[in-house]
Structures are given as structure tokens and as C-alpha cells.
Picture 1 (cartoon, helix red, strand yellow):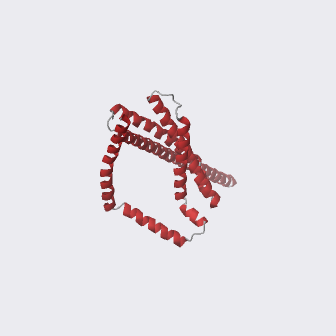
Picture 2 (cartoon, one colour; picture 1 turned 30 degrees about the vertical axis):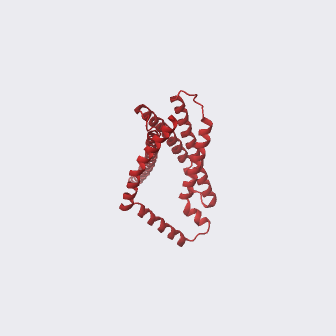
Picture 3 (tube, rainbow, N blue to C red; picture 1 turned 90 degrees about the horizontal axis):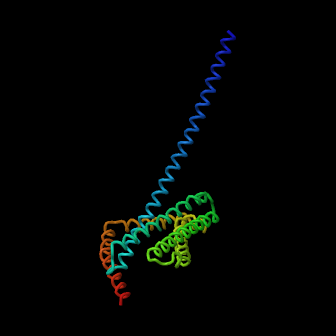
Length: 238
């Protein structure tokens, strides 16, 4: 009887130990799966941001070339401009993505110091991203035009950093507007009213009538850009 009791107790202990081991293994597997999913999400977001920056910069560079070369437009020059823009956008997207990930830990900081840290970090990342984008554009343009690769590099660095830092600081301040208002002592009721006004403005901007107005304006604006580019080209030739 005692042997049977001991065997039963040993079997229960082994079963309990096995259950704990299985539970621990499942917990580890769940944690690994969660980490892998989080990493996959971050990489996907990073890739989309870089792709968006690349395509946007390429399109803007192509449009700029089209506007500035109304009379001497060539397919080669157009695609070279798009290529330079794509390279600058890619570099800017990579720097911005890496910098954003590196400063993501600041999201948990509270109070005015947290607000200032997040805005400052965003401005710094935007400044470096703008400087890199401007430098890539300057270097590739110099190579394309058979000029010294470093020509105008210092100017593009300073200008790119200033523009990137300024726009990113403004964007960061806007995203922190609620926290800034609270730190300044603005009541929740006032914040709600302001938010409602902003929502109404957004709704009006996205309405069908607004789309028609914006579309009409764009229809007349694009020929204006082309005319301006042609006039600018004529002025240089004269």
C-alpha cells in the first residue's frame, strides 16, 4: 500500500513538473512569437516609410525638372532628376526611420521635460535627415554636371538641416499640442472645443465640394507652373 502511495505521489509530482515545463515552454514560445511579430511590424513600417519617401522625392524632383525645363526638356534629364530625387528620398527615409526608432523610448516621458525631449529629438532627426537628403542631391547633381562633387556641399548641409529641423520641430509641436496645452493649464473643456473645430475644418476639407474646388485649382495651377518654367528658361537663354 505504501509503495503504491509513493508511486502515485511520484507520478503526480512528475505530471506537475511536466505541466510546469510545458507551460514555461509555451510562455517562451509566446514571447518569441510576440517579439517576432513586433519586429516584423516595425520592419514593415520602416520599409513603407522608406519607400514612400523615395517615391515622393522622385516625383517631386521629376515635377521640378519638368517645370524648370519647359523648352529644353529631355527624357534623359527627366529620369536623371527622378533618380537623384529617389536616392535623396531613400537616404532621408532610412535616416528618419532609424532616428525615429532610436528616439521612440521618449514616448513614455511625462511632463514638460518629456514634451521638450520629444520635440527636440524629432527636430534633430529631421535636421539630420534633411542634411543627408540635401547632400545626396548636391553630390549626385555635381557628378551629373561634371562638377567637383563637393561643390556647394556645406551650403546644402546647413540648408537641409535647418529646413528639416524646422519642419520637424513644428510637426512635433503640433503632435504634442494636447500635452502642451495641459502643461500650460488649459482646461479640458477648451481642448475639446478646439478639437471639435479642427475636426469640422478637416471634414470640410474632405467634402466633395472641397475636392472639386481643389481639383479645379490644381487644373489651372499646373499649366501655370509649366508657363513659369518656360518663361524662366527663356529668361536664362536671353
